[in-house]
Amino acid sequence: MHRQVTNSFLALTIFTLLAGGCDNQENKTADDSQEAGMHSDSPSASQEDECKAIRQLYATYNAANVANDGEAAVACLASSNIEKYQEFCDLAVSGTEVAIRALPFYERMTILILRLRIDAESFKTMDGKGILRRMIDENWNKNAGSKGVELDQITFRGFTATATIKLDGESSEPEADQTVYVFVKEEGQWRLDFLSTAHSASFAFEYAVQKAREKGLTEDEFMFLVLKSATGLPVDEGIWKPRE
Image (cartoon, rainbow, N blue to C red; front, side, top):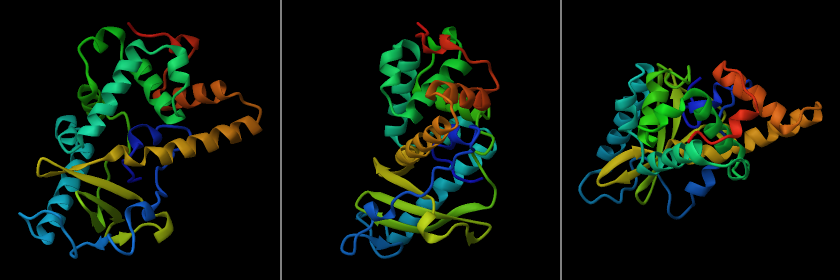
């Protein structure tokens, strides 16, 4: 498996959910979206240099995941991703059951997995960046990095770029279902926005919940099964209690 996005947890679920199928069209229009090598908004670097920088960033991120090097992997991420995991960290510590249940399924699952895997004492000295590092260092997602995966076509739109991937030199999926990664330029450096496709994960989870209901499971029963599958740890109603 090679889809890192949201894959921080999805590959651990009983569905080995893959967060692909993102809508390319929201990042591409006939007028303002250009194929790699055609357009750049950076006045200081050629388009070729921009593409090279993004490919190198992704290669570094992927290699860091393979090596379980959280420090190196997190250095490749967009600041918005760090900020989001800070929110997850804060909610894992003090979020009420009502507040967490109100979140999209994927975010709810992420917070509850943090509660299962991280003890209350560790939360006192941990922030969003620390959580991301720990996830990678401890190899929470067995499929976070894959050898032979590289970026394929890169498309630019302002200071954002999207890229499809190829596996062992070939596009691994039909065009309509290709995984799309998003990169943003921050302070002159490209960073990976791996949470940009989290909405796809939420849709996939909601679909799975509906299927579980059809089989007679409540949403909580299904969620507890996924949590146990993802972590190998026992799950009970205490998961809803804050960790303060």
